[in-house]
Image (cartoon, rainbow, N blue to C red; front, top):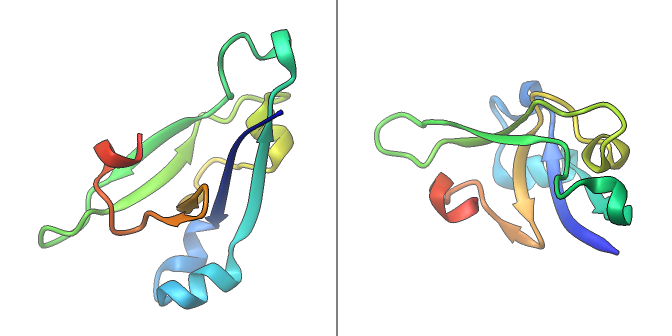
Amino acid sequence: MILLTCVVVAAAATKHSTPVAQRALGRLCVIHSRGQDDHGGLGFSLHHHPGQHGSAGEHVIGGVVAGSPAADAGLRDGDRVIEVIGLFIDHRLHTAVC
């Protein structure tokens, strides 16, 4: 069963990129449930790096657990999440994303 789909880009690839370029550079990660092996978690944390001048900031992956559904999907520490379940989230507040 699919639990979550997201598009992520390596942090270095987003420094001077437009949203269109970021999507082109992004990779799709599909997190699947393994049933009871998941122990209720996906195996990663979502961190917020505040933006400047009132912008929403960035949503960054951290704490990816080896062998977890997140690791199996290809998520890596430092990946910047730009899209979740088909919605571009780069401009959204962290509380709205979590």
